[in-house]
Length: 397
Ligand code: SF4
Image 1: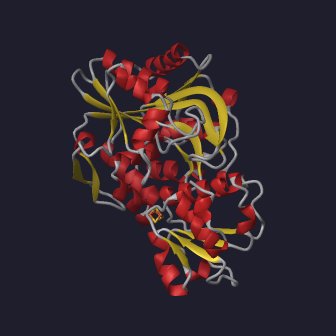
Image 2: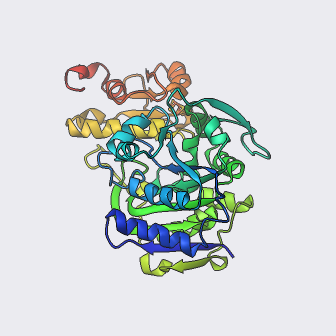
Image 3: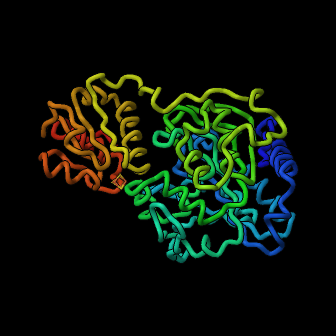
């Protein structure tokens, strides 16, 4: 029976977080069965994009990675912390802003996979539903073991994002975008089945609810959750967050494809129990950005990827800060490969703007304004929305 350990942290100090991580690992039977002496181990945090605050629940805090790092070293593994941020996002900026540079200064290898020094490669994927080849890095291909260390948060496309989806950060940017275009859910499961990560340790100290994965509301949970069965880990964590396992597409698909167990009656929960810590997370769909005019219409294609999602939400946040929301009245903003049938009847060249290369076809067909980029920059999105109505560059930097 797969085992999932839930531990509360006493506070947010490193000692308390390390104690919880160590307890989780101990309750899972230690690392010796999955990490042999000399193994090259990748510890993969979620550093998706630069947050306003490192403890916003949007990114994995360094303390959890460091505790895992020390545990791997203790059994003779050779760990590195490695990540590539979302498509178009700067990993190095997250490393600097979120305390990972301090780890580097202490000699811990924290690797920005997007750095040109890291050689890329293509790996063959057996029995892939969406992909039979995936573009990644040699360091990922050559790792003996991968440990995924996500944060506990909601996601606007996949309900929640935990350790399985976190592994998308081990793909080069073009491949990340392909996942969104060709099938995110099954693509993530293809990748998990190929990588066979040995352990998931979830940073549930601060989670994020609502507009995840980066613009959500911080939710303090003071938890560390872990398992060697990632599906079981995510079924239990999702349940704590208020989701039935069958309602989370990645969990369900991974279970159906034999990657692990999602039936809560067939999972042994050790440490703290679900009922003692469950606390419903607000869904992404339940959030409204205050002040957005009712007549504003944001049309997301289901195939739009995180790059454009984050950019558009971020651009709207910028507009809010600069009191530009009146310019959203009666506007349609199309994101990703939106098709004509998704448009309202009154969509026209004045009131509709298409965002990103995926939306160019619609822009050409309908003669709509088009914002170039993959993803475009925030300022370009705002300029695209404003059109001729305001000289935006004067007010925005
Ligand atoms: S244009 Fe946007 S939605 Fe399309 S691939 Fe690029 S980032 Fe993703």
